[in-house]
Every structure is written in structure tokens, then in C-alpha cells.
Amino acid sequence: QVQLVESGGGLVQVGDSLTLSCAASGRTFSNFFMGWFRQAPGKERDLVAHIRWSGSTTWYANSVKGRFTISGDNAKNTVYLQMNSLKPEDTAVYYCAATGARGTFEYWGQGTQVTVSS
Image (cartoon, rainbow, N blue to C red; front, side, top):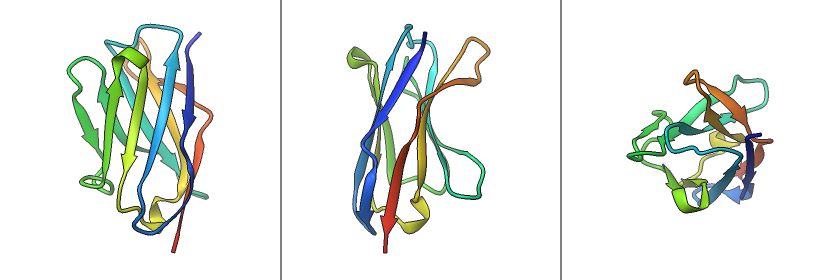
């Protein structure tokens, strides 16, 4: 059974940095994508960034491009989201996700809260 466990959320100030981690277990992830989503109160869950394990191809939403970096450690089956220059609008619950055999994000972590205070 696939398990994704996020950590690293918290309360920070505007302009601060924070790194989220997602530890994955339960299968081999090498041919799949790992992603970070976020959901602010009253809003839809949006994809922030994703990475393909093999080749490390990455994608970012325009709202975080240049500020966030997604990376993976294959040996640890862990994906990271380095977040710099944080803004109040980055406040949300951040979820780690993994694609399944259909190529869609099917597996989800429990979420970790990130709050950026001004």
C-alpha cells in the first residue's frame, strides 16, 4: 500500500524560506510523477509543482516559478519542496501526491499547513 507522509510545515514570516518533505513508501516510484498541491481555505486544490523520478523533469505553476524548487532523493524515496521568498498568498495546506498506473495523481498524503504571516 502506498503511503505518503509530509512534514516541514509551519508558521513563517513574509520573505522566509521553508522546506517540505514527503516520504514515500509502498512501491517503486521511478516511473511515476510526484507532485505538491496546495489548498487555501475556500479554494480548490491546485498543483504547485511536480517532478518525474526518472530524469528529474520538473514543472512549476506560474505563481511559484522562481521561488519554489521541487527535488527528489531516489535513495530515500523522498521528495522536497524548497519554498523561498514566501508570501501571504502561499498560505495553504500543502499535499504531496503520486501518480498511479493511469498517470493521474492517485495517492495523497495527509497534508501539512503552511502559514505565512505579514
